[in-house]
Length: 380
View 1 (tube, rainbow, N blue to C red):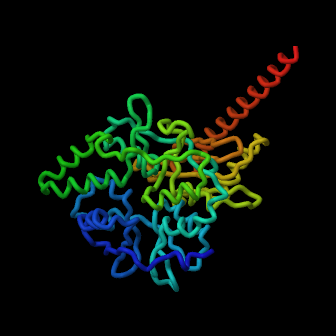
View 2 (cartoon, rainbow, N blue to C red):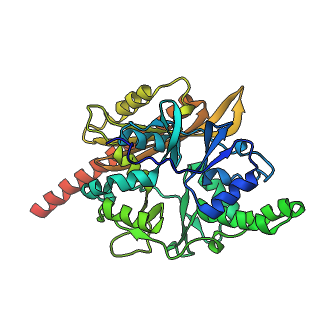
View 3 (cartoon, helix red, strand yellow):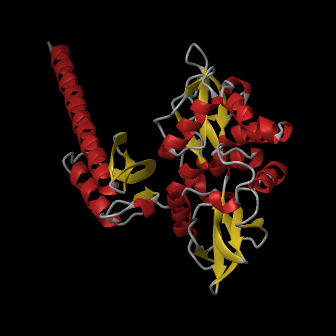
């Protein structure tokens, strides 16, 4: 399936020189997945809600100051490949070109609606993310923003003082309160107003109650609810207790599942692939396979590698965080690390991943030994 019938020529566009005040106003009034930025009619990039979290950028700044590059696709591109580039680009929309001319956009929602009927074969348990970042009710918005940026995510579950699910705070919630406050303050009060916003507890802006799912629900059913209610994610809880957080299912998880292949080599997906410097996608795949091959009983269904660039630099080379997450027949295994440049950060994360794989191997061996011992005792 290609995206010819999924893409749309109906999109919102602003010039690169447009003031951010107008961009913020557009997001508040029309709630788009993203805005296309052009320069004299030529495509330049996109702005999403995640970029609006850079609250230090003032209204008089230009749209190009928040603009990020987004993967460009053709109307004839395959849906699976478009899903891949959307995830790797970390955006909700991608510009669609036809004969080297900007024709329109394709959104994550449009792709999910198009493939919905094919998602019955998967359950939430097959694709959800187990390792969840959470915050407490009294966590300040400023702290939540830092967590969202650090982990490259758009939502975090909120837990009460007993560690039970209390709410959900998203980039949408935070941007809404920031924009509303900016509308109320004058320019002279702006800086102080921003400080007050960052000190607000997430309890005051979170959504509650929280939409949940469990590992047994079909992905089709879960995605249908997300599309119908305009949710970007659902908290995964045990079937008999919707107050305990065991994971999260996002639209990005579903898009990532669309890219799974049955090829000889495992599928590797890289978020922020533009940060790769002295290593390639193939290097990443070979190195990860080298680690998991040390535990022959474990089969990797999918590998996701995420790079995140920090502002700190060493002789011009940025400090980069790398996170590796494997979805295997033994569950999810992860490793993370930091270093200057993508190769160094990847190697640190890979070393951590290998230790976690070997630790899992030891745990499995202990469980097998314990089972054998119990069986022998039972025979006495």
